[in-house]
Structures are given as C-alpha cells and as structure tokens.
Image 1 (tube, helix red, strand yellow):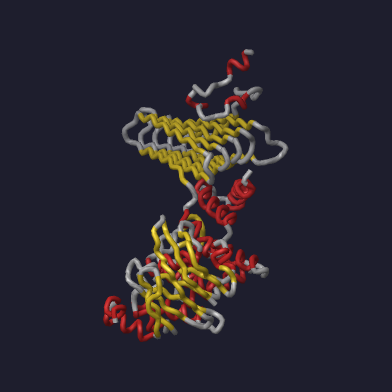
Image 2 (cartoon, chains in turn blue, green):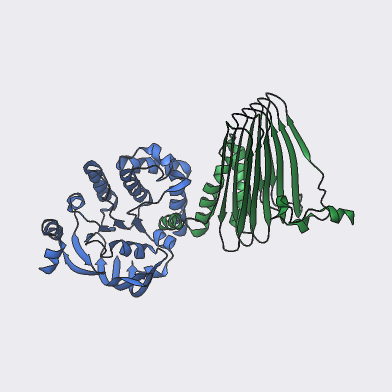
Length: 248
Length: 252
C-alpha cells in the first residue's frame, strides 16, 4: 500500500531523512520508534506534503501512485490521513463546518455524492461517541480551547469521519492520560484495523502499542530505518533503550 | 476650476491613503444624517457590491447623533467600486451606544476605507468598532479611527479594533487610530494588526482534503466574522458575509 524507497528530504538545507526505505502493505499496523531528532515527524510531514519539507531523492508510492507528485489535499482525497502531533487551532471555523467541507471535498475529488447536513451530523455523532468526545465540542472552533487530550481525541474523531485508507499518526499518544490512551488506542483499532487499510504509528512509548498491537516495529535513527522486527522489538526498546538495542 | 480646487489632497490626514483623484465630480458635501432619539434603537447596513447601481467611486458620509440611552448599530461591507469610503461622524449622548461592524475586501488597484470619528460628548456612553479588511493584488484597506472623549464624558467605554489580512504580496492596509481623551475615568481600547493566512492552518486543512481555494474562503470567513459578531440577525449576517466571500472567491 505504501512503498517508501531510499527517501531523502531536507529542511532549510539540512538533511533529515537520509535514504529511508519502508514498505507497509494493506492490513498492517507498523510502528515507528526512534530517539528524538531521528526524523519521525519529518517523515510524517513529508508524506503529508507540508511546504518547506523538500524531497531531494527517492520515491513514495501510495497504492501504486506517485504520492510525492500530489498536492497535500489530493493526498488526503487519495486516502491518506495525517494525525498531527500538535493539532492546529483554527479560530472562527467550527469543527462541524471544517469536517463537513473536508469530507465533501474528498468525496467530490473521488466522484462521490456529498453528504447532506443530516447525514454528516449522524456520522460525526457516531464517531464522537466512539472516541468518548462530547459531541457538543464539534460545534466549537477547531481545537480552540481544547485540552491536549481533547485535541488528540478530536484528531481521531476526524479520522473516523474521513475514513482514510492509510493513517500516519504522529505521536497521537503524547499528552494523553492512561484512560484516554486506551480510548484513543481502541479508536484506532476500530477505525483502521481492516484488511484494506494500514497504519504508520509513530510513537515513543510501548504503552500505546499494548492497545494497538503492531504487526511490525521499526527503529528510525538518523533519517533511516535501522532495524525492523515484531512487537517484541518495542518491548525490548522500552526495557533496554535505543542505544543498547541498536548496538546489539 | 473651483470644484477641483476644493478637492481634498493626500496632504490632508483624513485622505492620506485615499484615491483622491477618484473624487472628481463626486459631490463631497452630501452628508446623510441619522438622529437616533433618546431611548430608541436604530440599525442600518451599507453594502457596496458588484452591480449596475455601484459607481466607480462610492463615497458615503454619515453624521450620526445617538441620543440619551439610545443605540445605533451600523454594519457595512465595502466589496466593490474602484474607491469606496464610508465616513461616519458620531456624537454620543449620555449612556448611548454606538456599534460599527465593517468589512472591506478588494484586489486589483482598489481602495476601501472606513473613516470614523466618535465624539463621546456626555458621560457613560459606549462605542465599539470592529473592522476587518482582506486584500489581494494591489488592493488597499484603510481604517482611520478617531475617538474624542470630552472632559465631562466620565465612564466612557470606547473600543476600536482593526485587523487586515493580506492574501498576496502587493496588497496593503493602513491603520490610523487617534484617541483624544480629556476625561479621567474612561476606558478606551484600540488595536490594529496586519497579517497573512496562517501557514499551519492552511496545511492542516489541506491535510484533511480541503482545497487551497476553499481553505482561503474558510479562513477569510473566520477572519471577517469578527466584524459581524454583534449583529444578532443571522440571515442578515449571512447575507453580508456572502457578499464579501463572493468577492474573495473570485479574487477580482
């Protein structure tokens, strides 16, 4: 589903991704772990197409198509979802309006009929309930006045509504308390665990991986994947630390 | 000849950012008078939108008196004409309230301006002005806001807030707040700022599938919405916003 090959990317002339190769087939949850500054967030932004992140080499194919050739909004319509480590506040735009416009933009791009107001609200309420987010919060402006945990849950509600094929989740577990972590983890399972979907789960901690059980775990260090294994690799990292595991 | 000699020039502070050359043949001495009697409420709107009735220069000069305990609310959208200017002189009596919500949008070489002069002539009056300007091309938006609080006008509460959003290089806004306060127990707040579309918000919206055009519309709507917050008629609010957004959409 996602094939990253020898990807290099830089920000302000500084190389961050340095020959990264990774394949995530449909049906797989692939966790990416790595020390600070390894390039984890950069990887997510490069996949999302954020301006300022310049790809200098390599390729990314998404369902056979050249992902890097698409505009950010086209990538979303093609089925890519980027869960932000720091979800952005947008004063003056309500969640309901934003998400309805987003969903209908994607549907339009795929040649599907737009959802009516009523249909959309039903879907939004259903997904809010799944993530235990008060549906009243959807009437509020996007992420404005949300706590850290509410922002992350709202990200997952967005994911539920947009129903992507592939999700790149950048430290979705940061800022969550233990209960919220479980809710968010189960939300990810419920929304993304399907034979025709896949997840790239960027995280620092083993705890989320106890709920969202990854099929594979890779270590990202200095801009490339240095080791890939099963879920036991995450356990070892938690116990021994990056230096010890990578040196072994 | 005398008519030309009487035209204001850019040396005149009140016309400094205007397109004074556009004033040829425009009657300058026509003032609309609005007198709101004591205890009454008055609301009106001005919409300068594309259409046959809109002239290349749209000059609107209003003199408003808000009587004791009365309320006057004015909402205006300047979205068309080469040069559109709404000038409002307001005198507030005891305990009166004046509200202005102003929206200016324009591209090319157009100039839109709000020029206001509040005189808090008696105690306990309040005034609130919120003006938002979105420009692109070489469009210009101006806000010249003067507030005078006379010596006896204690407990005055006056606020003015202007923000400009520039969608492209080449567009500009000018803000000239001017406060003259002779009473000592008053609140006067003023703010002016200018900025661009928030890059983080743009990418966030794109990452959810919203096109750049729609993103611009949603962010412009959010920005302009401040000017209509105190208009408690939803249909009217939508109508005014639609005029402004239609212009932003077409980028003309």
